[in-house]
Image (cartoon, rainbow, N blue to C red; front, top):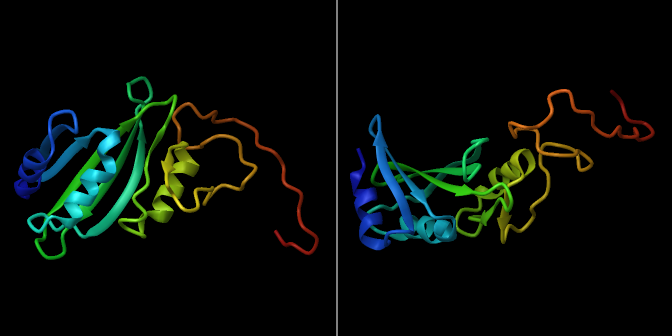
Length: 164
């Protein structure tokens, strides 16, 4: 469907920067080395042939038992060219961090905060990386596969005048 994107990545980046590419059901994807995450995203946005100017989504996948444990997954779309791509970058459990894309797409702000809050992936250079869904005292990251289902969390004191 949009093989031009994979061809442009192969022309622009060397082995080790783009780790793997493919197409599944007509949807192209590329696995990116975490150190080149931002450079690949910026290239795809700015390149006139790809023109992937719309940030659609960013999330995280916990692949417990595999190395690297987490995949950061982003979907991009070109309004003009009508093609899309999925980018993936693996981050290890010991240091789950990757560059922020907020300066490229301001809309990535809350998506990165959500991935941080629910999976514990940190986004270097993010302007306001703090919890977005869980309360600040919450311990852990609830969408990790090893998060205890029956875990107990700290109780919060209710503020005077608050309602249930």
